Length: 168
Image (cartoon, rainbow, N blue to C red):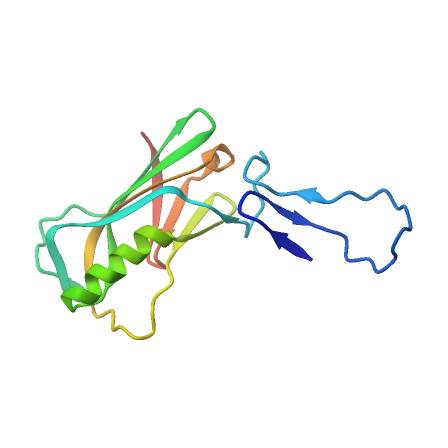
């Protein structure tokens, strides 16, 4: 059974034996844990994403401005956290202006779903079923994670290609 609060998650024994005194304590899997487990969902602190000025993809496979550099990912360890910067990553967005604005505001407020498997970090987003995401942009995303993520060597942004993460 997994129960969560805003600060920690705990895995508890699902034994139906009450008062058996088996001495098993809950296992703390909070963000302060130094051990990274595959599939754990991480909270991305200080999350921000923005489209690069005036670069909008009209179709999902062709850019209006081909002079944009390819996607890159960087990390920088500072104290007990790791700052990730993903530059020029393709980000599917609604084409209509007001929907675009609302979607980007919602993503910045809600943040991504972040998980890992081995040395790969997955950054994904929830998308409303009421909008069509036929446009996209080259985006810059920044966020921080616990220092346990300092061993990340690759990232997959929004279910696209795997990018090597460079030390910055």
